[in-house]
Length: 197
Ligand SMILES: CC(C)(COP(=O)(O)OP(=O)(O)OC[C@H]1O[C@@H](n2cnc3c(N)ncnc32)[C@H](O)[C@@H]1OP(=O)(O)O)[C@@H](O)C(=O)NCCC(=O)NCCS
Image 1 (cartoon, rainbow, N blue to C red):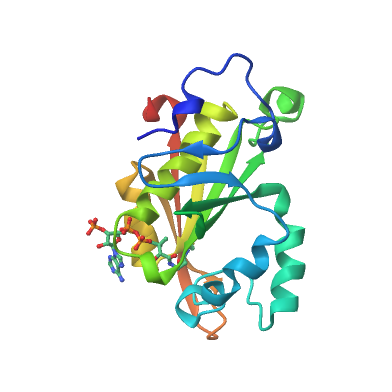
Image 2: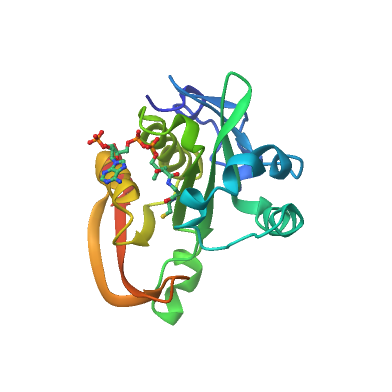
């Protein structure tokens, strides 16, 4: 279910902070990430099965806190029963354009990403959280295109993208260097706002 508060925006906000938080879906409450959330999510964020696919490896809570604080601009968390079970990002970006169209292309798309507490995985929450992030980008910020990417071996994340209706737009052969030392295929998914509605 789309977050209800997004359905009838009176004035379209341009930043995440301008949206009316928290937002509620059937399964999750979403709000902006805060500095103190870093410590709250650390017990599960640091688990090997989570960090396997994350961009940034944080060996210690101090490293994690430093990284978390640097990414707060784009951070949205998902709560169940008052506990943070999901952390995600919505990063508004400029679309590629010809140089003379840069102003019109500015902020027209968003990249989304997600990480879920393994304790609650496999119950549809990853899909619900990803759909909510997509809806915040489309209905809340009004972007015309949403993108997400992952290692091709990250089958759970690929399935989440497929389940929320994102389209596989590119497979890039051995494009991405995993911290295991292996060059892995990368995959890029996208969805237009017009395809969501
Ligand atoms: C990706 C992630 C958010 C999915 O969370 P989740 O709560 O398990 O997601 P859901 O319960 O909504 O369902 C995910 C779907 O993926 C499938 N799936 C889960 N693990 C899978 C696996 N190892 N291989 C294939 N499919 C898998 C599930 O069966 C389900 O599909 P289905 O409904 O058709 O059966 C979670 O696994 C995660 O946080 N992973 C670590 C961090 C990460 O990879 N982030 C993304 C980086 S791009």
